Amino acid sequence: MEKLLLVIPNRCTGCNRCSYVCSAVKEGMFIPSKARIKINNFPHEGYSVPSICFQCSNADCMKACPEGAIIKNERGVIAINVTKCTGCGECVTACPYGMMEQYESGIVYKCDLCGGSPACVAECNFGALVFKEPDSITRKQRGQQMKQRQTDSRPDQKRHKLAAVILKEAVRIPRTANYMG
Picture: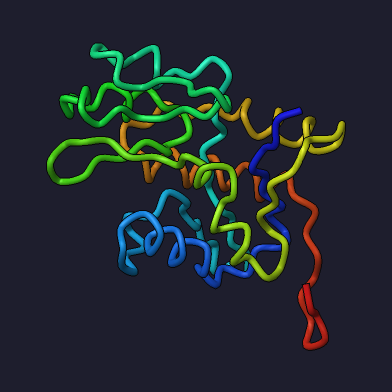
């Protein structure tokens, strides 16, 4: 059975360690804005919600690419063939979760699960990110999250709206002085 990257939003502290390690692994330096995972902060509520690529089984980004630069590899991961990418941005617009982004050159980037061992999961001390075989509960949670497709034009707007819905649906744990996650 394939493993899935899953988010448990009520465990996220907003520390951004996942985005720092992602950018270090993928970009060779700490540039969280270029990370493949994004953190949506809700300061008035006291919560943060990670945004991840769902590696969709019927990926809109892949269907939208006129060059065939987006493929599903042998592990079921949606990947980008950068030699075929022309930078048109159709996939960025098509992704309903805002997880496709472009470099200044126009070339697209997204999460590829770090070859099967996501660095973000290893760095998440509070267990907000997990990479595991799904069970009935996580499949249901993931399905509910994936139903929240967004149509705004900008990836950051799509991610924020999805995160707001996920936060609304999440079990909130009151944080007190003794709260340890």
